[in-house]
Length: 172
Ligand code: ZN
Image (cartoon, rainbow, N blue to C red; front, side, top):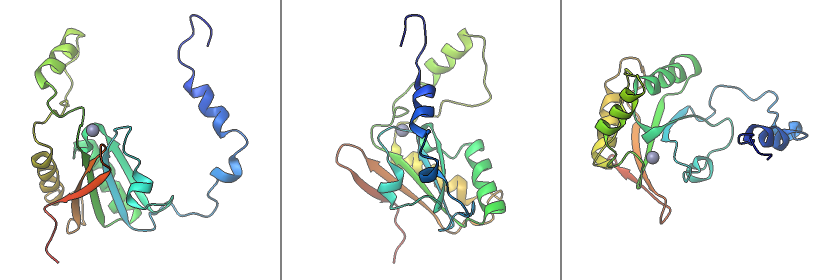
């Protein structure tokens, strides 16, 4: 990188993809998720969803946002996933050590306001990861945008020890 130029990740990414088209191509692979599942997860860098959940390309829709929260836009994507692309199961993944855990809704809003912005969305800060996940599951289970609301499960990943646990696992 030369002085005065910004980060060059996009250039590196193009280089990484160059010449690998054969590997990256998915000719004939359906855009409809093979396993009929959509995963809503936090965008945290430590969550490597495909190996963690045993997923392969083509298996699932992956929707990520800060927190893995059931926001309006997450529900938009899940609605499309179900209504247009045939998924009927949702798995929500939150995690320990999330950046939103204990963050300040007020300080974030104040920083935005200082820049003249009053967004319609909220930061989504929370104090209790399990309670927040339960709230998200409850919202999804009561969202008529989603025709398939029977199979909605919530998992919490701990990036320190690699464990993945379910919140309120259904009785078997
Ligand atoms: Zn997070």
